Image 1 (tube, rainbow, N blue to C red):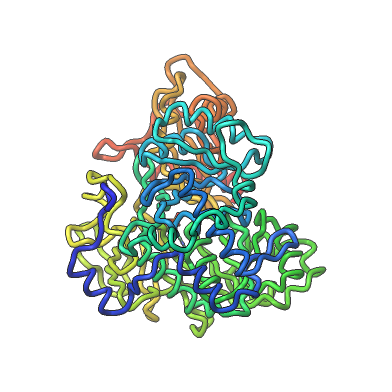
Image 2 (cartoon, rainbow, N blue to C red):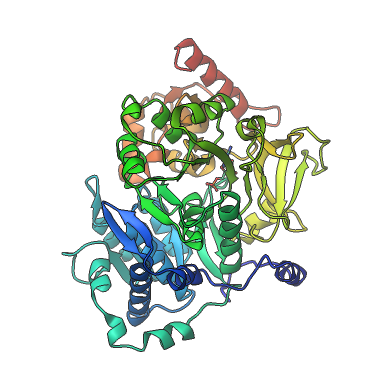
Length: 553
Ligand code: AMP
């Protein structure tokens, strides 16, 4: 077992197995099962090419054998920083099939984030594209490798790559299975379903990012429940335009759920309307997981009426709060049903049901997906609130983690003593039994579904030499829901612009650009609460007022 992994206590293991939640299948079985069922069905569509389940299975096995051949062992960690391309799915399943743990990062991450994960998780390998929009991932990987001694292999999409790196495209072309006894080898490394299978990233509440270990058993079960509640089947054509490494794209129901159902994943390189709308028409897409911002951009697209969206049955909307006014417009404008998803990479997953009333579908974020979920809504003292009152959502269950990877100090505060995960979300129970997200107590910013830890950013920003103190807070945004605003106090006599600060964050601190503050408010001092902490509530009020005065919200 992996050191630093916190699993479920014995009694819960027995309970979840007895109830049939954990069925003992490693995640690699998802692809194998679909190949056995109907190898000629299309599994993936990308850029007009269709990949059948047979081809998917062959590519996954070939890549898995190559990973072993170059020296990977079960429980090695592989950082996956790949865009929305089929190779990301091949590599993901190749890794989980042999017990190698993919760390699911985003193409937007930079040296600060990836370098940290590489060192913290002692990653063995790192998979990258060559470049995206002019950004050189090879150079970044070389720099990271010089600092992270555990990194042995850099796997790169495409050909023509520097010596010492491995081309994923070449591996996919090289029929290693003809030289080796593939079936026997893969059987020997078949992972134990109780093991960590995948590391997702935490939306973050602490100064340092956290890794979320999801086991084969729990991740499999998560997808299975979601797939059933979204009624995915062989006719499902599910378009993934959000980053494919996200928990939402992977498991909720995600590509795992689509493959369990024998459906087709349509990979969109971006969520932009001019990419997604034509694909819905040409691939007869039936379902789209999306964040509210994306759905709003499709609904208001000036070319919308030129596309035939008649195949679309379901928009699965989650990641950030969908306003009821927007939810009720989805049907009339896009001609589809809506299913709200409240999901967390830590596990907890809620969704509205397809037979819920319109009021429930539009106004709530759903109820838990498994009868094994235990939820509590508690006040600041940890006592359960009365029905309908707002409190923090706590969750324990067969697919909710019991601890972050290798982070005992934080686990002691992020979980209750009896194993409930403290979500940091403020929710209220609707009379239907569904939850409504009312806010949060965790200090994060939800930028159109991408979560940013305020503390992590403040640590980076405080390194700026001209700055004395700062507070990174959410400001409302009509499209993204929230954007980061920085309130800062400059050192005596100093002054600086947002651009100067952001250049420092990008070029010196090397952080992902989506985390950059989008507005700077210089103050003489930061307002404090009566216990002497920075009063972020007051700062959020100030910036909201200013934006209102400026007519921005
Ligand atoms: P992540 O783990 O990055 O997916 O972030 C999970 C967090 O996103 C949750 O704890 C919520 O704060 C937020 N979130 C996810 N889905 C929704 C939703 N449907 N409505 C409101 N907030 C959401």
